[in-house]
Length: 381
Ligand SMILES: Cc1ncc(COP(=O)(O)O)c(C=O)c1O
Image 1 (cartoon, rainbow, N blue to C red):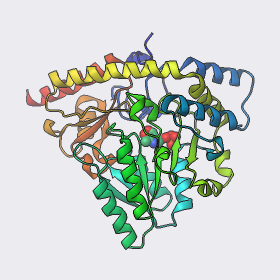
Image 2 (image 1 turned 90 degrees about the vertical axis):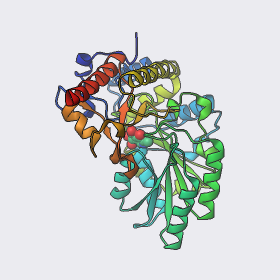
Image 3 (image 1 turned 120 degrees about the horizontal axis):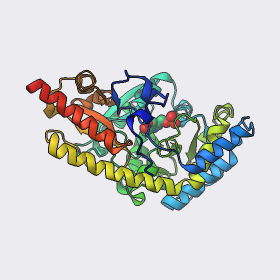
């Protein structure tokens, strides 16, 4: 049985935001949720917890240990459990670390484009936002980052950089050499790097991923298995400090850990500990879906450009050639009844782009391309 195989009617029984935010006749391929049958060890864990009424407060140790074992197995990255704290979710982790590192009015520097909630979370903690475009090949532009760090320093505005490693929405993965250079550039301007590594288990090739803390002892990371195992509704996350950033972890108030849900912590633990075979299967299906969408685009919508991603289940599509106006995703909801992520939500350089979620069945992906093609033909015909 396929993990990403359910048809539309089955998926529509779901009640999460993906399936409720648009009318029923819209095909939802926008938010980063998978249409997946969950990993059996996660289902067994959560079912057993509920059956025995085991719904108290979280006990973090197994979660931290399962993450350390997963990191060691997948990336040969040795994590000391003492350097990890449980948080409510990844973005709360990024926020809380930033509150410690930056005064109000300090600047959070991010890529352009990048995960749209980065801007929202920086605003939520009253920090200014600096956006630095990626290169044309969607890679970190280290010269542009250095210029942004230097400008902040010159203006007397302390800053941190939120790295998205692997990168959402483009699916690129920074190399070790790029991260080493980033570390040096950041250190020259006294900028701390916080690396969001939630998409790391979704690299096409595990060896492509470099944990940021393996190059920078002053760095901090936030992660969780919630993207890779489709557990966004089970809120928990982990932050990890490099050996020269332990003081930051020490300044996290203990209540920050209290917000993680026990059910989520247990589900995440089961995913890290026993979900490996499921993860490998889902990554295989995602590779098939990537190839399918590539074929469909090449044959039906050759004006769409898509640089091959190295990670994530997201496709960052340049649809500028389709003549869909300044808000292509908006246009496609009304004309094709397909909901995609609006490129400009991810930053100013997202003009002419949409983000498509590949973590669904081949049938639904095919229907999405059919609908878009049909809407374009109706327009010209
Ligand atoms: C890069 C990135 N970070 C964080 C999140 C959200 O994680 P959480 O729900 O744990 O805050 C997402 C969700 O899509 C994401 O893509």
